[in-house]
Length: 231
Image (tube, rainbow, N blue to C red; front, side, top):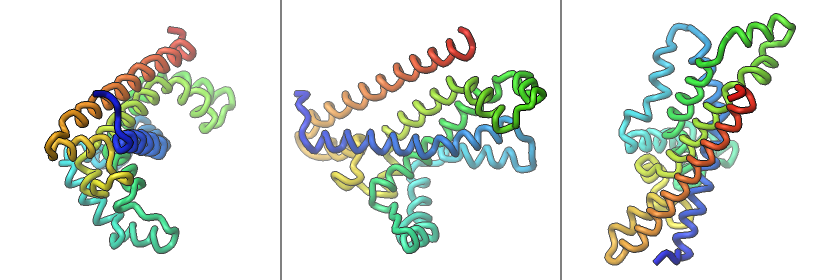
């Protein structure tokens, strides 16, 4: 019953690939935005926070449609990237990674922002008075202390990207071998006679991958806490 077919293996590998790429690309932007929201006060901060978290409250189909009209082949950003750099997102696995990254970005930012806000600012101020530059303080003090939150955010981002469906299928469709992720494959299998067994296999695989990611996150966060906090 759990002998996966070649098509199912393709969907699994593609989902993991998309989730990893989405997390890796979103991480530096997530750290930057989280730091700005945690440490800076400026006009429009609430608006920026609202925009960052908007994908959480919008229907995924709406987010996917906005990506389509923006990064589609005829969209302003999509046409510019395709004509000048040969980068195409619509109906490609790269577009699926973009959609997953956008949908998971709020979870990544929130976890990292909370981690930044929990850091004792006096530690950073002390490093600054000893002559460390702001960038060095960030790399040697802020980032290590925020590492558990960063890891938690990465896992949340990965898990969300792994299970994303609505925005992805709207933006890049459901093309086997190119954009058909585990979620899309499960949806397809539930629509055809006799596909329940294959759908169940993929459900089990998705649960196992997500659970393994959560366990790994807990282990890494605990190790980071022991190293930098002495817990």
